[in-house]
Image 1 (cartoon, rainbow, N blue to C red):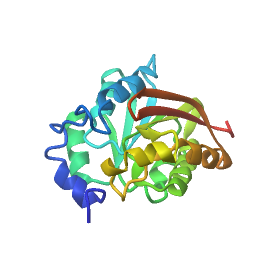
Image 2: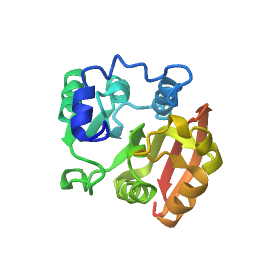
Image 3: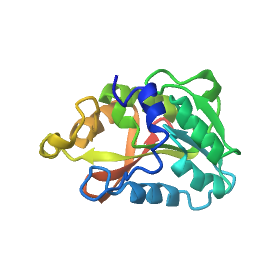
Image 4: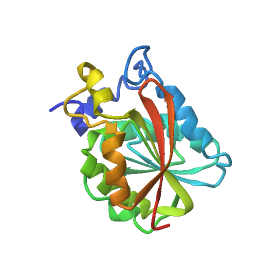
Length: 208
Protein backbone atom coordinates (compact mmCIF):
# COMPACT_ATOMS: atom_id res chain seq x y z
CA UNK A 1 0.00 0.00 0.00
CA UNK A 2 1.13 3.58 -0.61
CA UNK A 3 1.87 6.51 1.61
CA UNK A 4 -1.86 7.14 2.09
CA UNK A 5 -2.33 4.33 4.58
CA UNK A 6 -1.44 4.49 8.28
CA UNK A 7 1.60 2.27 7.82
CA UNK A 8 2.97 4.61 5.16
CA UNK A 9 2.50 7.63 7.41
CA UNK A 10 4.08 5.76 10.32
CA UNK A 11 7.18 5.29 8.17
CA UNK A 12 7.11 8.91 6.98
CA UNK A 13 6.86 10.27 10.53
CA UNK A 14 10.62 10.01 11.14
CA UNK A 15 11.43 12.42 8.30
CA UNK A 16 8.16 14.37 8.03
CA UNK A 17 9.26 17.51 9.89
CA UNK A 18 12.50 17.72 7.93
CA UNK A 19 10.78 17.30 4.55
CA UNK A 20 10.70 20.29 2.21
CA UNK A 21 6.91 20.55 1.99
CA UNK A 22 7.12 24.02 0.48
CA UNK A 23 9.86 23.33 -2.08
CA UNK A 24 9.66 25.83 -5.00
CA UNK A 25 7.75 24.42 -7.95
CA UNK A 26 5.99 21.73 -5.93
CA UNK A 27 2.23 21.54 -5.50
CA UNK A 28 2.72 22.45 -1.84
CA UNK A 29 5.10 25.36 -2.34
CA UNK A 30 2.93 27.66 -0.20
CA UNK A 31 2.54 25.11 2.60
CA UNK A 32 3.86 27.45 5.30
CA UNK A 33 1.79 30.39 4.07
CA UNK A 34 -1.35 28.25 4.22
CA UNK A 35 -0.62 27.38 7.86
CA UNK A 36 0.10 31.04 8.63
CA UNK A 37 -3.23 32.14 7.14
CA UNK A 38 -5.23 29.56 9.08
CA UNK A 39 -3.51 30.42 12.35
CA UNK A 40 -4.16 34.14 11.87
CA UNK A 41 -7.85 33.42 11.21
CA UNK A 42 -8.37 32.99 14.97
CA UNK A 43 -7.32 36.46 16.19
CA UNK A 44 -7.98 35.76 19.87
CA UNK A 45 -7.02 32.10 20.27
CA UNK A 46 -6.71 32.10 24.07
CA UNK A 47 -9.25 29.61 25.45
CA UNK A 48 -10.68 28.75 22.02
CA UNK A 49 -11.28 25.12 21.09
CA UNK A 50 -9.56 23.77 17.98
CA UNK A 51 -9.99 20.35 16.35
CA UNK A 52 -7.18 19.44 13.94
CA UNK A 53 -8.20 16.64 11.55
CA UNK A 54 -5.10 14.89 10.22
CA UNK A 55 -2.89 16.60 12.80
CA UNK A 56 0.23 14.74 11.70
CA UNK A 57 3.20 15.73 13.86
CA UNK A 58 1.39 18.83 15.15
CA UNK A 59 3.05 21.59 13.11
CA UNK A 60 -0.06 23.80 12.89
CA UNK A 61 -1.55 22.71 16.21
CA UNK A 62 1.60 23.81 18.01
CA UNK A 63 0.86 27.43 17.11
CA UNK A 64 -2.61 27.24 18.62
CA UNK A 65 -1.39 25.47 21.77
CA UNK A 66 1.28 28.11 22.34
CA UNK A 67 -1.41 30.78 22.04
CA UNK A 68 -3.62 29.20 24.69
CA UNK A 69 -6.10 27.29 22.55
CA UNK A 70 -7.50 23.96 23.66
CA UNK A 71 -6.44 21.56 20.93
CA UNK A 72 -7.72 18.10 20.03
CA UNK A 73 -5.82 16.33 17.27
CA UNK A 74 -7.02 13.35 15.22
CA UNK A 75 -4.85 11.15 13.03
CA UNK A 76 -4.73 7.53 11.88
CA UNK A 77 -0.96 7.21 12.28
CA UNK A 78 0.17 6.19 15.76
CA UNK A 79 3.73 7.27 15.01
CA UNK A 80 2.59 10.72 13.87
CA UNK A 81 0.59 11.03 17.08
CA UNK A 82 3.65 10.08 19.10
CA UNK A 83 5.49 12.99 17.48
CA UNK A 84 2.55 15.30 18.18
CA UNK A 85 2.27 14.18 21.83
CA UNK A 86 5.95 14.90 22.38
CA UNK A 87 5.54 18.34 20.83
CA UNK A 88 2.19 19.16 22.46
CA UNK A 89 1.84 17.46 25.86
CA UNK A 90 -1.05 19.77 26.75
CA UNK A 91 -3.20 18.70 23.78
CA UNK A 92 -5.63 15.77 23.50
CA UNK A 93 -5.27 13.15 20.79
CA UNK A 94 -7.53 10.65 19.05
CA UNK A 95 -6.23 7.74 16.96
CA UNK A 96 -8.79 7.39 14.16
CA UNK A 97 -9.11 7.17 10.38
CA UNK A 98 -11.25 10.10 9.24
CA UNK A 99 -12.30 8.12 6.17
CA UNK A 100 -14.62 6.39 8.65
CA UNK A 101 -17.43 7.94 10.74
CA UNK A 102 -16.11 10.07 13.57
CA UNK A 103 -15.63 8.37 16.94
CA UNK A 104 -18.13 8.86 19.76
CA UNK A 105 -15.46 10.64 21.84
CA UNK A 106 -15.74 13.67 19.54
CA UNK A 107 -19.50 13.85 19.44
CA UNK A 108 -21.21 16.25 21.79
CA UNK A 109 -18.15 18.54 21.83
CA UNK A 110 -18.24 21.95 20.12
CA UNK A 111 -15.26 23.63 18.48
CA UNK A 112 -14.56 27.23 17.49
CA UNK A 113 -12.32 26.09 14.65
CA UNK A 114 -11.88 22.78 12.83
CA UNK A 115 -8.85 22.53 10.55
CA UNK A 116 -7.93 20.15 7.75
CA UNK A 117 -4.54 21.01 6.26
CA UNK A 118 -3.29 18.88 3.38
CA UNK A 119 -5.34 15.93 4.57
CA UNK A 120 -8.78 15.97 2.96
CA UNK A 121 -7.39 15.24 -0.52
CA UNK A 122 -7.14 11.61 0.55
CA UNK A 123 -10.96 11.40 0.32
CA UNK A 124 -13.21 11.34 -2.72
CA UNK A 125 -15.55 14.32 -3.08
CA UNK A 126 -18.50 12.32 -1.75
CA UNK A 127 -16.45 11.24 1.26
CA UNK A 128 -15.27 14.83 1.78
CA UNK A 129 -18.85 16.07 2.00
CA UNK A 130 -19.78 13.23 4.36
CA UNK A 131 -16.90 14.11 6.69
CA UNK A 132 -17.54 17.85 6.50
CA UNK A 133 -21.20 17.32 7.34
CA UNK A 134 -20.18 15.36 10.42
CA UNK A 135 -17.69 18.06 11.38
CA UNK A 136 -20.23 20.85 10.89
CA UNK A 137 -22.28 19.28 13.68
CA UNK A 138 -19.33 19.82 16.02
CA UNK A 139 -19.09 23.58 15.42
CA UNK A 140 -19.75 26.04 18.22
CA UNK A 141 -21.92 29.08 17.46
CA UNK A 142 -19.91 31.18 15.04
CA UNK A 143 -17.44 28.33 14.50
CA UNK A 144 -16.00 27.43 11.14
CA UNK A 145 -14.16 24.74 9.23
CA UNK A 146 -10.98 25.70 7.36
CA UNK A 147 -9.44 23.54 4.65
CA UNK A 148 -5.90 24.34 3.53
CA UNK A 149 -4.85 22.29 0.53
CA UNK A 150 -4.17 22.19 -3.18
CA UNK A 151 -7.30 23.50 -4.89
CA UNK A 152 -8.09 23.74 -8.61
CA UNK A 153 -10.65 26.09 -10.14
CA UNK A 154 -11.82 23.55 -12.69
CA UNK A 155 -10.91 20.25 -14.34
CA UNK A 156 -8.84 22.01 -17.02
CA UNK A 157 -6.61 23.52 -14.34
CA UNK A 158 -6.23 20.13 -12.68
CA UNK A 159 -5.33 18.48 -15.98
CA UNK A 160 -2.46 20.94 -16.48
CA UNK A 161 -0.90 19.53 -13.32
CA UNK A 162 -1.82 15.90 -13.94
CA UNK A 163 1.82 14.87 -14.19
CA UNK A 164 2.39 16.04 -10.61
CA UNK A 165 -0.67 14.36 -9.12
CA UNK A 166 -0.93 11.02 -7.38
CA UNK A 167 -3.83 9.10 -8.95
CA UNK A 168 -4.90 7.96 -5.48
CA UNK A 169 -5.36 11.52 -4.21
CA UNK A 170 -8.45 13.62 -4.88
CA UNK A 171 -7.69 17.33 -4.83
CA UNK A 172 -10.59 19.75 -4.67
CA UNK A 173 -11.87 20.98 -8.04
CA UNK A 174 -14.10 23.91 -7.17
CA UNK A 175 -16.64 23.72 -9.97
CA UNK A 176 -17.40 20.13 -8.92
CA UNK A 177 -16.94 20.41 -5.17
CA UNK A 178 -18.94 23.57 -4.42
CA UNK A 179 -22.31 22.23 -5.70
CA UNK A 180 -21.75 19.00 -3.74
CA UNK A 181 -20.93 20.95 -0.59
CA UNK A 182 -24.01 23.15 -0.97
CA UNK A 183 -26.21 20.13 -1.58
CA UNK A 184 -24.77 18.66 1.61
CA UNK A 185 -25.77 21.72 3.63
CA UNK A 186 -22.37 23.41 3.72
CA UNK A 187 -21.67 27.03 2.86
CA UNK A 188 -18.23 28.06 1.57
CA UNK A 189 -18.02 31.60 2.93
CA UNK A 190 -14.51 32.40 1.68
CA UNK A 191 -11.97 31.04 -0.79
CA UNK A 192 -8.56 32.58 -0.16
CA UNK A 193 -6.02 31.69 -2.80
CA UNK A 194 -2.53 31.90 -1.31
CA UNK A 195 -0.56 31.46 -4.54
CA UNK A 196 -0.05 28.79 -7.17
CA UNK A 197 -2.54 26.02 -6.45
CA UNK A 198 -2.63 26.42 -2.66
CA UNK A 199 -5.78 27.87 -1.13
CA UNK A 200 -7.81 28.02 2.06
CA UNK A 201 -11.56 27.34 2.05
CA UNK A 202 -13.62 28.60 4.99
CA UNK A 203 -16.87 26.74 5.53
CA UNK A 204 -19.85 26.93 7.83
CA UNK A 205 -22.99 24.85 8.15
CA UNK A 206 -26.21 26.14 6.64
CA UNK A 207 -27.91 24.70 9.72
CA UNK A 208 -26.14 27.16 12.03
